[in-house]
Length: 113
Image 1 (cartoon, rainbow, N blue to C red):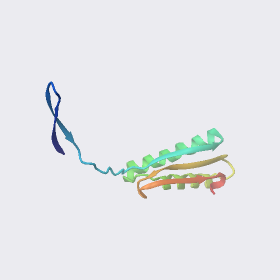
Image 2 (cartoon, one colour):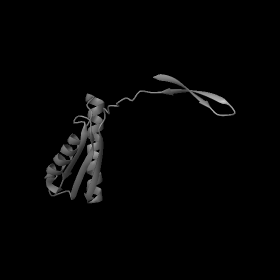
Image 3 (cartoon, rainbow, N blue to C red):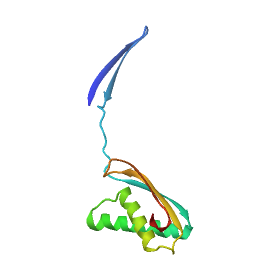
Image 4 (cartoon, rainbow, N blue to C red):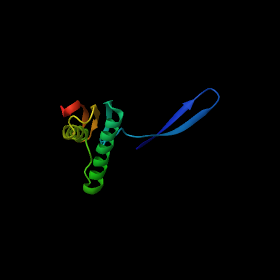
């Protein structure tokens, strides 16, 4: 942090203002953010999203492993494949993936393809 003093002079008075400026820093995001866009049966897609959320949270609490967008999309695909024909759902998983340090976008259609 650098300190600077700025002096302003006008015909009637002189003002000195002390300012503090911070050097720019780069913030590294250590967490992924993920959004699931759902299409199909509301009950089916809500159940899928809830199951994925439960799995991600439990993995983080039990194994201290942070979930990624890729992992969320993989879980969605696995759940759709395991329930092939019983669920009417298509999903889009998108967000910032901390492991890849970039944005990620995955589409998972009915049947897990």
